Image (cartoon, rainbow, N blue to C red; front, side, top):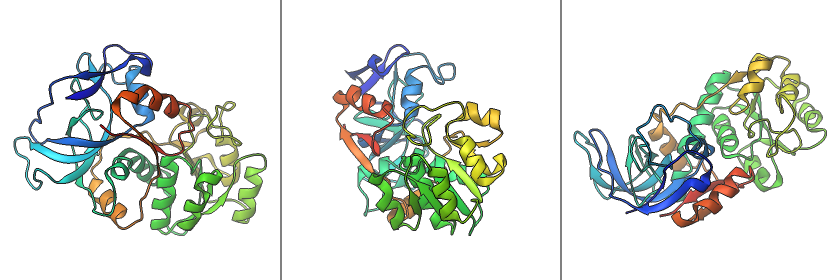
Length: 317
């Protein structure tokens, strides 16, 4: 089968497409014929050496989230059959992962008939991160939440989940996603000079809690660009009046300095069935910006690392 691998740590330039043997599903796992593989910043971090001391020796694959058709069942697997459409996290403890023609899944849920494979592959990591961030921040129904960087996939997932929980939302986003966010009941304002003042005006004062979902250190005016120390967090603290009412999913160094909450993604994915249910009901719908074949991985990586992908980037083997 065709698969993406890297033999040494470094930049995405190290990634190569190769012909390799298909992986075999171990106990409690399944193998799928991959129809879509979502790309994430974590992929480039793993190529750069993240988890290097916790995983087997190189070569290694990339691709953490997959949608496809069940091809084989490992020992002890019940409740799912070959030919069914599923999505979930790909196993990364072998020489290949999700970016391949076949992948082993460590957890899965059935894909609702109403969504595509590409849409399903966009769900797991962004939704898991957003769900956990809302829980970590302790947002309660009918509170007013500011989601900064809501044009990101994590940000949009946070807005959609928050609205589903009965939370009032103000979102900062660019024009490309503003209409979609307003469509689920968020009040949207743009980035740029005066953003904090516009949020305060929409809120009628302070917001109850604020969640930063922009890339690390994102500026107030351009969350897709690096900013000064603290990024947007000082402004969000000002809007809530309390660093404990502010959370971030990315700017961990600033959070430690300023005393805000942080959410670090834990690849649990025990809520996949709930994600599938919400996607089937139209509550969760994340934008897929572009799809790429495996042999265009370097082009996809360049766009992803630009911090301006415009939505989820998906490999289609």
